[in-house]
Length: 413
Ligand SMILES: NC(=O)c1ccc[n+]([C@@H]2O[C@H](COP(=O)([O-])OP(=O)(O)OC[C@H]3O[C@@H](n4cnc5c(N)ncnc54)[C@H](O)[C@@H]3O)[C@@H](O)[C@H]2O)c1
Image (tube, rainbow, N blue to C red):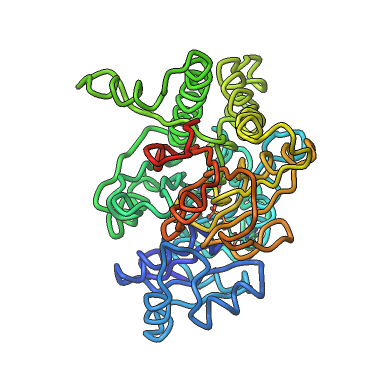
């Protein structure tokens, strides 16, 4: 069993959040056990293959070779840790409401092995009250001995995968703990791996702040998506308007239109907020309207693209360029391009896709850029994607990224 001052960390969930955290802790001198319930993923990680862009294979291999890191499916290993961080997914269910089943199952799995004096931290994004009302009761009811003392904090991860400037180390870390001792220990831990920490009064404040950050993005993106439709109807390029407005040195922040919002955070977290509001007898109407506007974008983009095709063609061939939800990553979770694909197919189009970072998507394989098509939609401008080849072939392109709008045959959103 561990003691509170051992430098052994257990990280539950070895994905976009958990693996970079594990590597940061190794660099700071911690010995890390990375627990994941997917045996195949654990085997790949232990063979030095990183599943996420923010951790290089070489970095992972070095950590494994030094003996400071290993991945495991065995929850009993957390018994050696003085700190356990939970970094498992918190998606939506079919009703588009919070699905904490993975968070609950991970907590139940570790609870019997939590040692005396362990600090348990949740980094997963969830609604305010999750640490206190979901995680702590499970651990308290299943921990090996009633007399064991366990510390708890919430420290929602803010990492932006693929971001070359802001990372796990230089992004200030929010920490809200259940009592002063938990707070001191959580602050000491994050000070060992982050440049700056921000202590807030309760876990609920930290949990709510994370939802506010991502909801702020959702509603601003929705505003710009709506604004873009208004401009387009009047023949004005919204991107030029956004650039013009951005010259104001205060009080304006540019957001860009696109096919919608994707990934595990922006389309999901605001719905945790609206669900939580309903639990408290309130309605997050603004958030729900923003969600609807963004979810209508794939249809709008599809309509605009089909409008570029000769109406005599009954089953136009449409090439989707970039299917990951943002440039520089292979992550297709919640990508709005899926809805775009569906809309186009429903309209009778023959649809194919190309993305240099994605090798398989929804059980289908990519085509190359020579695929014969009537129109292409630049949904995500992936690095290394040679879009110019399509321009040279004279293919009409709808550019949803504002990155090639100056080229001939290219229309802006
Ligand atoms: N991806 C991001 O950009 C990002 C940024 C900030 C916060 N978050 C939040 O962090 C949390 C994790 O997200 P992620 O993107 O790292 O997810 P992910 O899917 O990349 O990784 C999660 C890992 O947890 C594993 N897992 C699932 N259930 C488990 C269980 N019961 N026991 C052990 N392992 C389990 C999965 O196999 C997976 O490898 C979520 O709450 C998310 O909202 C994500």
